[in-house]
Length: 341
Length: 273
Image (tube, rainbow over all chains, first blue to last red; front, side, top):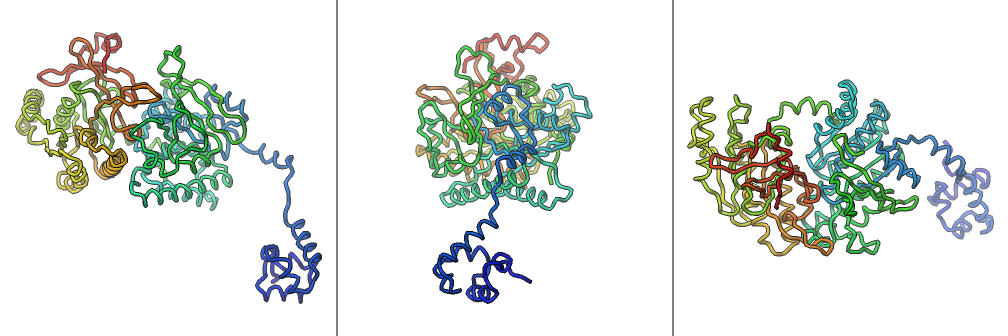
């Protein structure tokens, strides 16, 4: 059977020269490329210029660039779901970043702003829009998932019992308590998608919320272990998003800069998100600086500062970070019995 | 591998709750305090947190024939403020209501069904929480654990990092306990002043992350006519008034008859945290 090196360099080098290389443990095109040209020249007795030319030919044959037109065709095949919340979708359309396959988003806010409510709404809107053909996986880390609330949202939308049951069937819930368990759940999902069996048709994963499953890590060693797990988790999320087009919305918690009960060393595991100059008006994110680089879009849910806004159910959604365009866009949403609208 | 919402929804109706005795609060909580969840009562001193905890310690014993759990309670007292005479007074009233159904459930029996442990400092509190698994396996009838108050002893730790570390440890163990046992956990917390964005605001003690880990936070406030207001929501900014109650000799009662527009009356009543 021909080796990779024979296939790659059969035209440029003789069989004798290839055997010489193999005997010196240069048996793959990659090793040939990474070995110094002077060493190769000494082995196969060819001038340096000739070695350089061979390497150039190898690059030309094996590295294929994709044109923007071809890339655009790939992009066109991606499904766009939308959030189902009119004002939010309009804002996301303005920044050319609708909710679609392979998005990794982060939803943050201080406690009591309605993050969980927004995640419920995203789950309901997603399954309703796909006519329950695609499923949502809701990862609940706070032991707080209220199926009754989801049911109430569906009922408020005047869906009949069959549609409600189908929607509830399409929302899968799993309760996890540690980062290790989240990793295990996502690994399992990855394996199933890779095996292409009667795979779960899960296209959206919602996590409520990531900081809550890190409460067990209190000592310094445990916090460092937690950082390692966070890195693994980020990598797995990216793999699922890019290879299998699963979209993620991950809940995170903000805390006030002056909250004396929040010590960044304790909560942020030594990684404060100080990548941007912070003012006293800004809140800080949990999970640290590394995690802040994982998501491509970070949405913040806030109480509107405008005092004219007397309605307690109004929330301001703000784009805190956008890897592909402008940030700082805002829109208002309302928390109602029928979810966030 | 994954459970669908429909499966959970169909199984949920069988779940039992501990009634609070306040109609509006029970309605909001879909029947009462849920098992396997952490519920926090927060208010200024004297607004009814301890009274509610005592009442729940008895309500958990409600006979099954009346839709109750017929369980027992464990009362963890960190403030050394437990009043057995008040508990007996509440039990005597309940005896007159439940005695017709189960004659042997008299006031003395009800008081005996409330296990009490005093934890005046943090090491004792942690030791007790850690030993609860064993205690619950010996006493499977216990359906309610009350910690009155969670913040009292924790706030004695001046070093913030150490306080957070202890709080995390407690939360971790409490969450494990709730995963393994069919029991409800009720904790009380105090209000404190906090500097947020250069302004002092009133907020519950122990910080936002503690609030994030709770399943329900219920606020009690003082209202007019010796009534107390019930508010729900994680923060002061997002809470909502849902009803009023009165603390009487016979226990906690709805302040205004629902048929007379309790909700509207409650909204009109001036509230003061």
